[in-house]
Length: 351
Image 1 (spheres, helix red, strand yellow):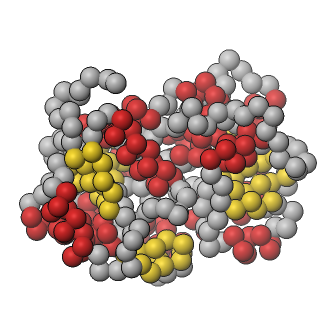
Image 2 (tube, rainbow, N blue to C red):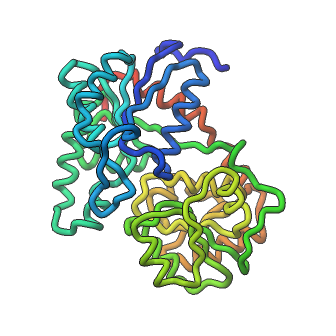
């Protein structure tokens, strides 16, 4: 176990408040789960406040996301009983709002993180709500935090331009022991196999992938509110639903190219998972993919997604000295956890 980090107590009690939790399967949930496991491995005590075990209702237009109803009284008691050394509010839902209010009431310092592009999410579903109004609300929510964590430097610059302060980098990593090429992995479909993994929702821009004229088979792993309509419209694609564990690793390894059609993701944890399993990536040259792979020869980024896909297939067939797997091995979870620890004890200063 590494030695203590300067300025960070050896055994902190850390409360992570999140509206995103199991049974949801997405990058936010996986990030927070692995963070807690790694913090515990470093000797810290981690507790989560989640919708689990609370009365919840489905988020309008996205029923799979459950929001706790009037969670404040119980949450205040949980915070008092646990007496955390650090509170991290990971989401801006009802639990996040309640935790923010409780911390401000009792003078408890807290940090936040920005995982989901709410302005774009809202615009995709409620076109009549001005984007700047959503940014104004987000500035109000994150403003009192000692640190607002974002995944990449480009996102930090973007949020600073929107008036956010106390911004800190908290990168994402991948468990290369779990996500790895699996010998003999196969899917019963005609190759090449083009794989998408993630939520099946309008903001993920999956139809841009499914509408492409590509050889072989398109495979979608994941679930969400757009699945039914997309499955009916694109019957040639294979929709496998949510997968995890070895089944997910097998789907990655047995595919030819990982296709990431989102234009709005702040990072895209699935990119690193796919790379760790040996898959090259095809994506648009937008913030998430650019921040993860940059100009590395393990991905093809192009405004024409079909061109990107075919170029990524060429990478798969003719790998260079830097392989998707070797690239992923340089992005460990431990480095990300140490970033998080440093962030939760900083004092607010520069933007």
